Image (tube, rainbow, N blue to C red; front, side, top):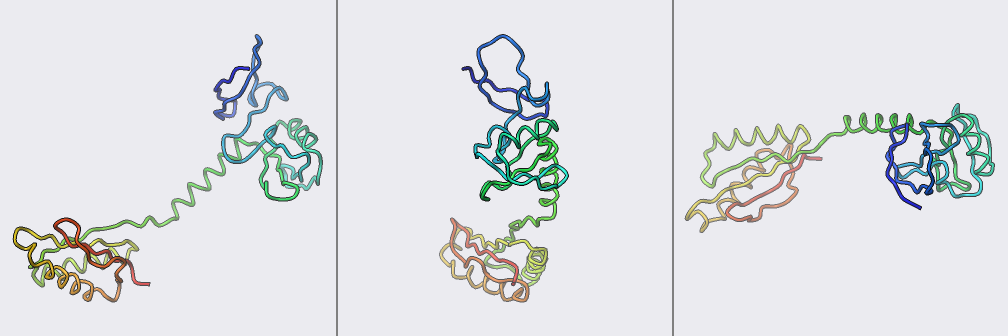
Length: 207
């Protein structure tokens, strides 16, 4: 048999085997009960469900009980809906009769809403110099404190130029002073270490 990629009437992109015959191939968007499309996610639906019997929940939430999978699939097809295995680890697996296209749409919508509520933690950077003046130190410290209070992490770096590389211990003193100035909102996630010509330290919001 030949394997082809198609898009069904519900917009599911699938890859299936078809027999070598002349005639139309109907998916779930075509004539009912001719051919139903399989899932393109991790959920098994319709003919992909291999268990001999399943526990079935109807589209309106009614418990239909345990029955042969073929019978459950027949009921779903009569309603022009899909049989979706929503709990494959259960004994027997739990399947629900739903419109799979609508189910995927609502699931994607819920995931999108959940992502909006998630806080994306960013790493902000504050750059210092070995001979930074107190005024500049205070300004940079206020900036870092604001980042930390917003829930972000802060990368603090001291850049050495020319002969300053011979006195990198000065950079550690600067970083220590910087941390102490915002100790009420910050704690060290990664202690100072050299990266090329810079000494780098990472701060995180204080717990």
